[in-house]
Figure 1 (cartoon, helix red, strand yellow):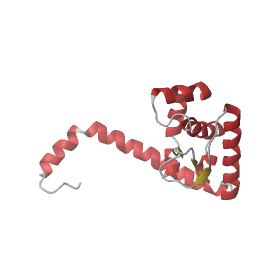
Figure 2: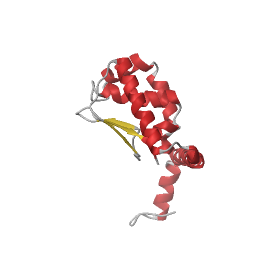
Figure 3: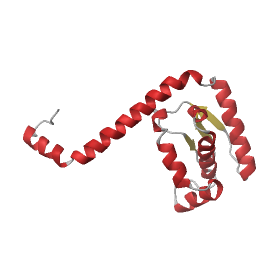
Figure 4: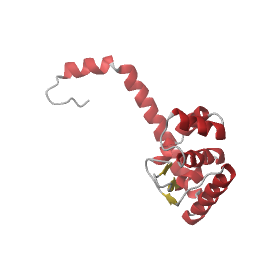
Amino acid sequence: MAVPRGVSFKTAESFARLKKDWIVKQLRQAARLEAAHAAFQRESGSLMTPPEARKLLTDRLEQLAARHGFTYQRVYVRRQKTRWGSCSVRNNISLNINLVRLPADLMDYIILHELVHTRIKDHSPRFWAALEKIVGSVKAFNVRMEQYTAMLL
């Protein structure tokens, strides 16, 4: 165990005992993420080529935008490490190339999330209500997305 300078081992040990439940919870979550990341890495051989993934994502973005009446400026497909997607103030949409690895309904959820941002630029209650009108239970989608967080590592 590493102890910060100026802190006695006894003080650090007391602190760790006090925070034991939180520490155990964090260690379990880290183990789940590591397992999911390892599974993702094992499966990466079946990944479609980057040009195929880009085409699939841009085509799906176009289809969903047309179906729900959204417009956007440009689309970028990138290998992002911290986000599944984003929408700029100019309505340019960036999509993570790893979206193609998600189940189709989750991929669509992320794309629709970014399309709603073309109209509502924040995560206000109004934004979530607009997204919910399109996809149904936003909460259920967000819970399911948590298991794929390791794909972003």
